[in-house]
Image 1: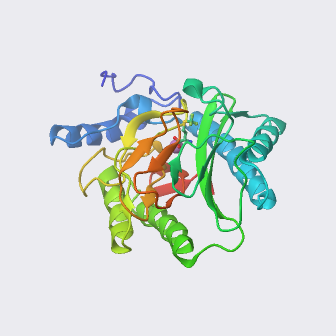
Image 2 (image 1 turned 90 degrees about the vertical axis):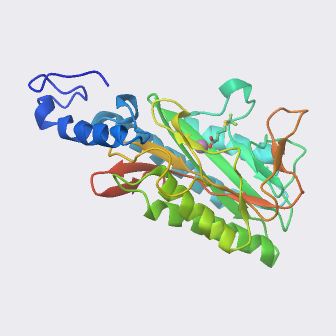
Length: 290
Ligand code: MF3
Ligand code: CO
């Protein structure tokens, strides 16, 4: 990290002197780094102005999910969900982040039953009674990114699928309890993983979450299976996603080689995912997407 003279203005744009702003925090981070921990660099610590932008973006993201929640029903195609997401997002002044992202062809990811994530909306995929589906919405607003997803149960859903959906949501809540300054991302991951395993489920290892805000996917990579005390130190100003993919059976997955996107469980058993964007604050966290 570049050294700043103590009386110079802080890099974050607060207008305060460095010694009255980020200096103490960065000294503390340095201490953890010297102990061998992974620590965030300055680009991962959002300024108050950036946080406000991500907050605004997140409000749109939540409103779009609320809109989907009001309208989703059996008989609807995932293409219709895509249209709803794009229209609602643009109506609120945002841009759907998935559209064109690394070639992704649609505005939202729709992943049904044994699809783990990154399902592509299609006219041919019709929601039917008994399905569980993840709707993953990501928004760009004034250049700021937000990202969150929810599960929906279509009509009457089997008890075992319902339980998977519920436990996966609890996994996010358990993980969130660990989000506070000077904890590690591994503390959060371990809470997620422990709850999933206690319920007989497996958390996907190969795909994780990410920092978010100025880009769609930023550092750090966020694991949901890492042990306590490992992975990156959490510091106020970091914004990242908690988005574990929880499988009823094996954690093994594969990517559809025809569309190059859709991720499936290897054993064909169902998978669930909930996602929030969270900010690490001075005294804990703020969920930006609830
Ligand atoms: N919303 C997904 C995530 O949580 C984004 C997948 S990339 C896309 O990271 F192109 F498929 F949208
Ligand atoms: Co995400």
